[in-house]
Length: 263
Ligand SMILES: Nc1ncnc2c1ncn2[C@@H]1O[C@H](COP(=O)(O)OP(=O)(O)OP(=O)(O)O)[C@@H](O)[C@H]1O
Image (cartoon, rainbow, N blue to C red):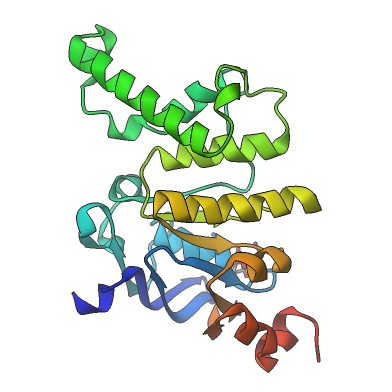
């Protein structure tokens, strides 16, 4: 499929209405492989609805969403149930970090790998050799990811009481266990201070570089968006305003009046 060449996602003519309100209105954009792609817009512009449509949490009224996942296989997502999306290689994070405080860091990360467990529950319960071998592989993979993110030395510490920046890394590590081709980050800078946001910017770039995945960033923090995105899609009232590089977006008069408060 040629329109998926060098692309991980292609959204075409996406629309969804709630009652009479067109939350997303004929929106089209594409995300290239290994691209950090920003989706911006003022409150109520439709950003959350767009990624809920991509992850199939909402079923769009119209539109096609093609995703190139594991093994470069292209799937039309709107035909898939929500629980199958992660297996294809598309994962999202949530605005509030959702980790289990009573478990260690590594156990929280291992939870992210369970979707891929090949051995069945029966052999896992009996701890048969196949299940044990798999668990060992997952543990090694989790440790590799933690090392990559610079927090392997904390792996056996409980999540409860860790600083927020560390929690973000644990959440990312758990996400990476699904070996994603595309990660949707939902306002990752919410609640972070300036230096934590700088750290986050580095972390997102590192993840893209080392884990070879594309990132869709939905974020209000303009500095973060402008700092790390290769391209940005600006929307308002569910409609596309423009797509461009951070510089092009900053200079676009429609974007300026919609988002940046410039008349
Ligand atoms: N489940 C729903 N039922 C009815 N209306 C909805 C629903 N979800 C979203 N909307 C409406 O759709 C529009 C777009 O909302 P959405 O949350 O996608 O915007 P957003 O850009 O993510 O906003 P914010 O930046 O405030 O998070 C809003 O007018 C919202 O009220």
